[in-house]
Length: 434
Image 1 (spheres, rainbow, N blue to C red):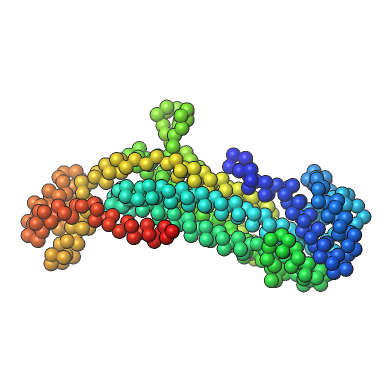
Image 2: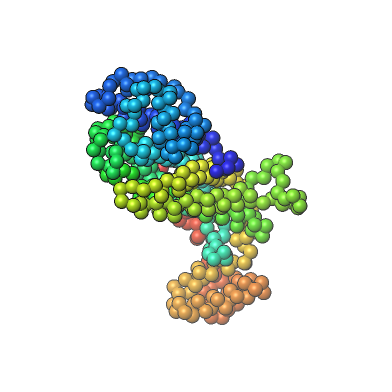
């Protein structure tokens, strides 16, 4: 993880200070419940909180101990005993390392998800505002990158809004799935730790209990979480790619905001490059590359192995930090996006009305011509217009077969762009239900 693509609030979740604070809270809450059960002295639980609550855990000291013991949780517990004193012997009674590690990871991933959900709200707000602004801004729709039929820029953005709204729902489900606690001891049987300890810690940490933890929380939960992040990343890339295409010099229907003093190229002073959306495309790849390792983490050996551990130490921070940054960058792009309706109209008119070819085709079939003949008649008049030889409308009027079925005024009426936008309100009502 590099600072260039990181925001402080999300980065803090994955810091050693945050991690060790969560580890302490898990151990201290577990000690509270064990004291209530009479497993450890109540005075010991009180001392653990008293001396650990405001303690400054030293990552350097923990690393120093770990270099000797080769175990991160033992290193932490040893450091905790240095701070708490003799009563620290009652910490971690009946627990195993995964009880601490997995529960902590659940807390971190849940907190990260809460930030991402706020990020999604910002993106959705920006998309909704711009969609409503350009609800009736007509532009050409493209299939295979080629002019197809008219649409509106607002409809384009409404489609992206609906996609990100689905992404938010997936993220909410992922949060629910990952927000679980496991305090079940070795191989998950609760042999040395009462199940009520797990329930107590879960409640204090804002989590639900994992029904069967085996010793680790099942990694299908984590896989679903990272899959949800990966899908959102793909949605970011799709929108970024749309903007990049629409900003090409030959198209130039939209453009990233270009601030005063900004420079686009070290060599060519005229350049205004879509650097933000290009960056978003790259960030999306970084997030998605975490999905497959998360899937592969599901198949652990028996009740527990640690093949997942090294993976999660990387993909947990990387995926959430990158996605947090990307969502905020995307929101900024959309909030300040420059839109050029006049250019959209120019591009729509570029092929001289060819975008209305289907209307002519359908009108001929309604007039009694077979679909095969209708298609042939329209196509033979469209191709000269495609090559720039003659206007499509003029070709149709001059075609004896077409003229035998449609009056000139009827043909002209088929070139009305409002026909293609008549159901925009229906689409918007579906998307923006409120």
